[in-house]
Image (cartoon, rainbow, N blue to C red; front, side, top):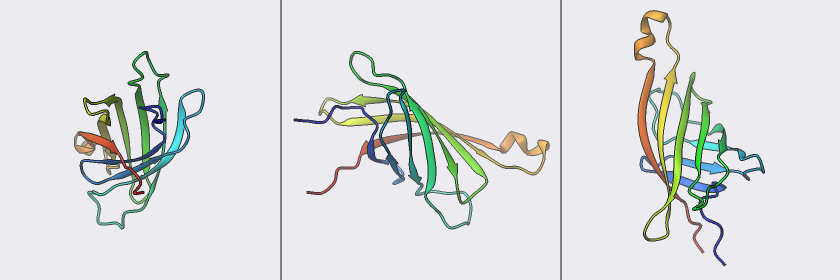
Length: 129
């Protein structure tokens, strides 16, 4: 039988090639995981970063909303994602997300340029049989 869809547990990849692994989602909808970004604005070596979040209890069609925070371990920035899981016409799970990335700046005068916004689409990484 097929696994239930739009449970976030598992491995995902986005349109930029970043990888995300979500551990088990508990009964409250909370989850932990790891995030390996494929893109960075810093010259630092990219490292895997911790992720923690919350998935809304699934609704009737189980296309749950969720949010998670990635504390970028190789830079002094944090990204928050929010989104919803959809099952497309082909039965494929798709996470449609929007994110805010906050970078550390030296003074309040630089606050205006400290937050970036963007969108990412994640699909489930299937393990090769």
